[in-house]
Amino acid sequence: MKISRLARAATPRLLLRLLTGSTLVFAAISTQVPAWAADPGASEEAGEAPVPFEKNLVGGHVQLAASASYALPFGRLSDEQSRTDRSRGGGLFTGEAAVGLDRFVFLGAYGEYGLYQAAKGCDDCSASSWGAGLQVAYHVAQGLRIDPWISYGVGYRQLSTLGALPDPARYHSLEWMRLCLGTDWYVTSGFAVSPIAQFGVATTLDAPRGESAGSTDLRFQFGLRLLLDFPGR
Image (cartoon, rainbow, N blue to C red; front, side, top):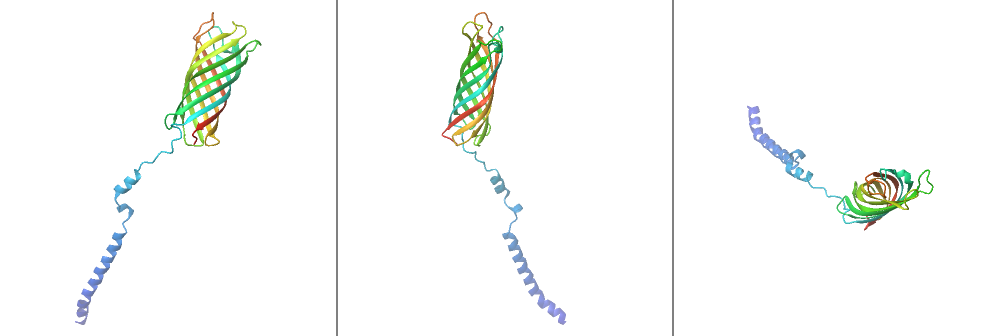
């Protein structure tokens, strides 16, 4: 009898304690929501936030460049004359001006002048050339201190030769491929130095009397390019 009376007296008290403990445990769990139970939409929205581009360092910029290179001509000036019959390699000097169109592309113009050595077996032979045209350049990694690029241009080229031909003999050509590779290294924010390698292909449009036009004149060159960028990087 005493045991049953103690059990009946302890039961309400035990139930009250159990109820109170359960309430406290549930409250603690509810205030610490795990990451997997959070709103999935919020994490997705945070992950899909657009990443802004770096500062545009090409669009609207103006560049002036000057380069000196050693040119190796080959191919033919006409059906009757090869390029090396008139001269060998020589120095080529180029000036360029360009403006940035967007984040990666420059549109510009160039002018060049070349002086070539005498051909073998013809000490009196020599040649000079000049040309001008338009070109577009694509910069691979704008915004970096080391900026590789590739350019393609078309233009007009004139070659004048002396010796063994009417004095002077002139060849007028359309340079329809002027492919150049380079890597600008910015010494300062507005001045860069770049090694360059260039390959040009031109078709002769007009040749001296007695020669046939339409031949392909080729030229490979390598050198150094100095660049000024306004307003700088």
